[in-house]
Length: 195
Image (cartoon, rainbow, N blue to C red):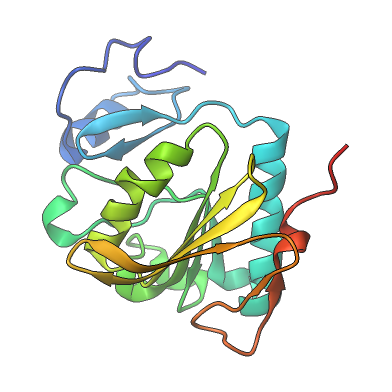
């Protein structure tokens, strides 16, 4: 996989239209990245713990919301005034409607019940840049699965571009998504036993 740096695509404030043109012309074949605030963020290959936790989170959320409403590593929309500079690809999101609803457009905050990232090397970006990006778009619930600390960060109540309620859930705790208060997900179920 080639990185944005390898292709000489860093150091420029990119727009969505420019990136889509490069993709259409085949210049980004083999690259995995997301456009965040005008920067192409290299989505490095996933190590086994990251890949496993993304899959576990998808399964746990599918058990609550149904598989046809859970999307994995697909684009979501930023706030309307930021869409030319940001096209995030959260690790997992749960949509209000069945997947067919999004055949012609990406889900935006009003369509999404929960958005989540799995963080190992990306924790700083996920807790700052992405948290603000999702809050400005008014995604009502944002989860970060912190691989290294083995806990779940839960962000809720976006107001004026930031989340006003932040909770740390540790092993032994349970969490109920806002959109499914009757459901209970054990933090222990997110993390495979340490080797």
